[in-house]
Amino acid sequence: MLVRDAMSTMVLTIGPAHTLRRSARLMSERRVGAAVVLDPDTCGIGILTERDILNSLGLGQNPDHETAGTHTTTDVVFASPAWTLQEAAEAMAHGGFRHLIVLDDHEPVGIVSVRDIIRCWAPARRHPSTLVS
Image 1: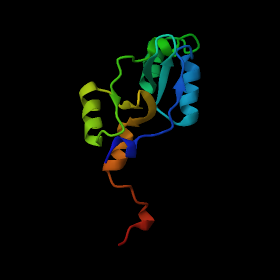
Image 2: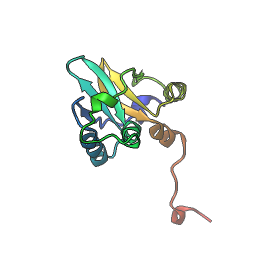
Image 3: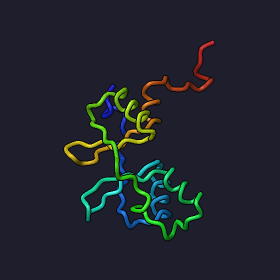
Image 4: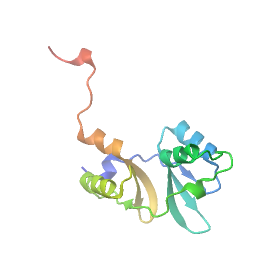
């Protein structure tokens, strides 16, 4: 199975000036654990994850003053839609992260997470009433 088969195509894109509170609100509304941060001044692509926001709060920083740009990971490992899920899982394990931005022709087209990979590799849970005795 390939990354394109598992990735979420709902990509939340924010700017570096978004506050952490606004970023968290948008992530929560869309039920995603990461946002792609596009910085038009640097033409760079970064990622802000729920863990980045949690770390900031844990340090006592004010989410209304802290910006996504300050907490964005910019040394991002990108995946290709044509990667296998094994390649994506190995990149995540090697890098110690849970999300990969998927680029196609230098444009973000999706995000694949550890959860996405597990959903593909593990059989779906069955409701107890559907099990045959």
